[in-house]
Image (cartoon, rainbow, N blue to C red):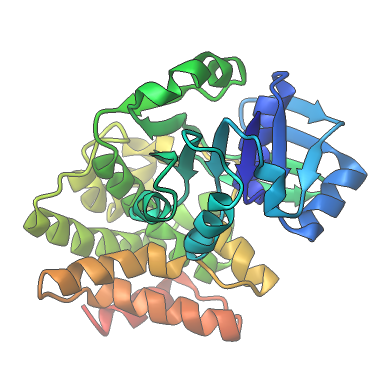
Length: 331
């Protein structure tokens, strides 16, 4: 049995694709999600035109739903990782495989500390999923699932392939996680813009905000001896320069970056809209922690953390010019 632990947008989409392929999947999540799925089932769509439905969904609202699981996909928000580990420790059998499909770079370590008798594998979901309500979850950007290579995953590789979610295995996932985090530095910018991703990234002022956050992070990673993996057609180190290009040049040079579903938004935007705490501490906040560990500062990312925390209390939309001016005050 496969269990998705933390069935939000990512969990419902990934688990739903597996269930649509005929695999035995149990979802564990909040009562709100359980009620939505019970009423509507699951419908999984993507930017390539996929349209899959799962009518008979097994959904539990308690940790006991994970009992007997052979494979657990942890998709809770990063702030809930320690609690998830404690809950799973009480129900999982020794040797169960646990994959962290979460944002950030430290969740697998937290899970390992809390699940010493299980096999914990770092993973990453590179694509964006939007909840459209009524049990509909839409993949708006491209990408396969990334995991660190582990022999314990061998029995499941074909199943993920059949589900249309092939596992890309890496000898070391940390460079991939940092590369994804560099892209996710756009999450607060998108949330503050209150615009769909494609519309936001089409505007140079917002891209310059992202370029500033990425440049700051790349300098810190270089000082730490971490070289981010290449996730795009160009090396991550060149991305800030491309983002700063005028709009008409950017469209010609990096038009593929705008090949995004027009409705796609970030999970941080969804959290602010719903009045939920965001994962800012595990994205831009992770850059601030890295800077602290090196005895350096990360003022751009630090200011974005502050703006999102303020947005969690009082929602405000920022134009690209306003946000860039705000960040320039600390550059």
